[in-house]
Length: 312
Image 1: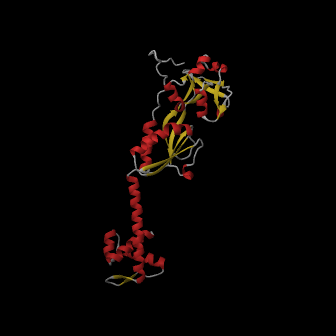
Image 2: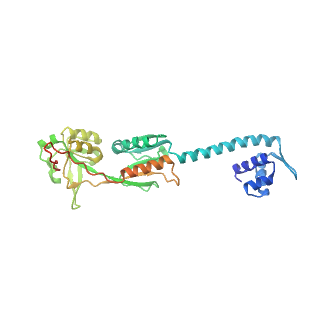
């Protein structure tokens, strides 16, 4: 028998002093009430109740055990109440992990808005370009870019991860803007280490062009490439989330708009749970609503003569 149920039945017998009254309260038979009490006595190796045909009376052991049962049952009720409270109002610590660029540029600003909406929630945002184990590392959710493996996690799709090809006005003042993939052979292409010296561009006709991205500078950090591009050191191919503010401000100019790098899928993933906690469910709803639709590609600002800048 379930020990906690037997303790509950025994406590009510001690309080009401009658098996029949307890049976009526729990909608079970008086015989079943007796079985719960005997199960506890067998487990303890001691008699808890003196029973006669007319009444039941606690033994000395029974009185001591009743006091302990009451304390245990009150703790169990408090535990249940805390879970009910947790499921009712978003509160507690929310642990999220995301890639460095996407997390710092998109998730961090969104997270501050989320925390303003839910003042009883605290957040820990861990930015890392490796795939974290949600269970082992104690994360509530993760933002993952790229194809998902069959991990058993729940995955909610977000807007795809798009890339931009850009250069600073100072670079374009000294070099003719490339219009086709083969034009890049004559340019300094700021290369990300994992691109292995090549860019793969897709034209509007769906054809893929593999072009060499030669550069005197290679690094494994997108922000470092952004800074080099702003300094006029070459053409950069990096995520839209990293470059879009510079494009809007005119510090970078988008190039080769007829060619794109294939977008990568983005997902919000979390562990399956029939009833997610309110803090997690609210976060899921917030992030999906905010990032499920692709953001428009940024345009260069209007020049001082009032005409819109032409995209190269």
